[in-house]
Length: 150
Image 1 (cartoon, rainbow, N blue to C red):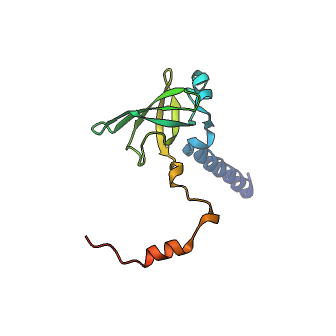
Image 2: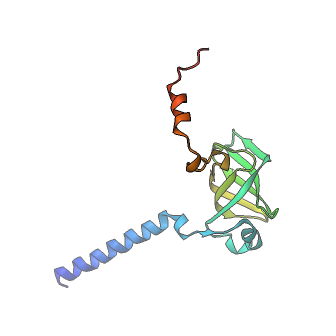
Image 3: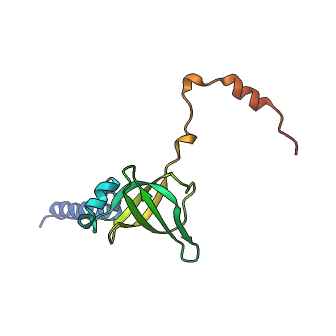
């Protein structure tokens, strides 16, 4: 074989290896995004898939075991569908009733989800008001006031 042919074949092999490694390293890119009701209805079909699903946290269901670094909780949707979640990792900030949780992982047994990643969305109470109602003078006065003494 000519030297140019070997270089081209070697380039294709290296490019193929890079593409394979990128696909293997990013399971989220090949995952499935489902609503909670669709996941519960088709749970057996998605056992081997990397799934992203959202649900509202039920605060009374939170069980945190700091020794095992294990978090168990339930999420629901607006239709009343309920799913149990098991997560081995630290408890996210802002983990309170009604916060929207974004779960990434895989469903296991009936109505149970093992999460590899748990994120929370900020509740709407932290969102700003409409910019039309913004009064810069109000904020300017507060910024120019001396700090309160204790």
